[in-house]
Image 1 (cartoon, one colour):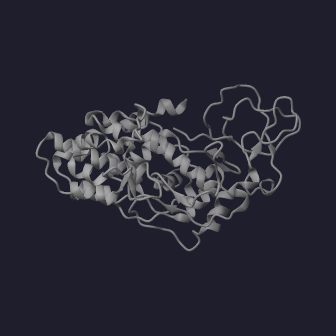
Image 2: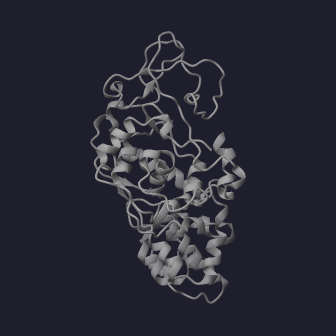
Image 3: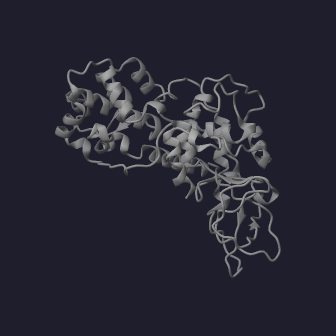
Length: 385
C-alpha cells in the first residue's frame, strides 16, 4: 500500500482550485488515485521562508478565486518549520520492561493468554536496546503538520504513516472494537480485586495510576494457581504493556482507565489497539511539531522505521533482515549502524529539503498482498479508503 502523496508545486496563472486534497503523484510514480477526473490547479505558494524552497507548502484559493487566509494550515508563522528552533526530542515510555517480563518472568500459562490477545508480534520488537536517532525525529517533526497529519516535502509532496504502514512496522492489528474507558475505575476496589487480584488492588489503594515497576513486581515469576489467577496476571501484563509501550506518555505510570477492555481476556484481542496506538503517535507528533512538547509518546520508534523503509537516504543502518521480515521493525533494531558524523540535525534538514521522488520507496511492503501477514493484509482495504 502506498503512502498518500499530494504533489506540491509552484502556482500557475489561470489554474483552478483542486476539488480534493488527494491528487495524482508525480510522473513515473503513481500514487493514491484522485476522486475527481477534473483538471487541478497547483496552489499558490506561501510567502516567507517557505517561498524560498525551505518548505514548499501550498495554500489553495477557493473556487471564487478571492484571496483568503490559509484554510489548511493555521498559524503558519508559529509552526516549528518557520522557526527551526526545535533541537531535541526525548522518547517516552519503557520498551524493555514488558519484553523482559514476558521473556524472563512469565509462566507459560499466562504467555498463552497474551499470545491469544495478539500482542506477541509487537513484543518481538521490544527490548532490543537500540537507541533511537533523535535528530531524525526532530527533522521529521519539523516537516509534520498537525492540521493534515502529513509530512510536507518540497518535491515529493505530502506523505504520512498509514494504518497499513503501522501494522507492518509494529505487528499491532488496526481495526476492531472501539476501546472502552472508565476514568473512575480505580475507585472501585472490589472491581480491581476481581480483575487484577488482591496484591495489585491493595497497591492501588484508591490511586488513579501506579508506576510500571509497582505493577509488575507482584506478578514477576508468579505461578498461577488456577485459570482465574492466570487471567489476572495477563490483565496486569497487558495493562502495563499498553501504558509503557504504545499508549504511553512522558510519565512512568500505568493508567487504570483501560481496565474495561481487559475484563474478558478472550476478547482483549478484538479491540482496536493498533488504531489507538497510531492515533497516539499522531497526537504526540502534533505537539512536537508545534513546539509544545519535546517528548515523543506512543511507540515512537515506528517513525524511525517508517523513514528507513520509505525514504532511502534516511536508512540509519544496514537492515539485518529481508523484506519478508515481519514485523518490519525487526529489520532495523539491533542492525549494524552506518551513521556517521554527518547524520546530525542540520544534515537531516538539508536532506529533507532536497528529497526527490526517486529517493522514495513507494512499495516497501511489496506488491503481492497475498504474501503479507494477516494483521497487515486485513487493513489494506480500509487504508485505501
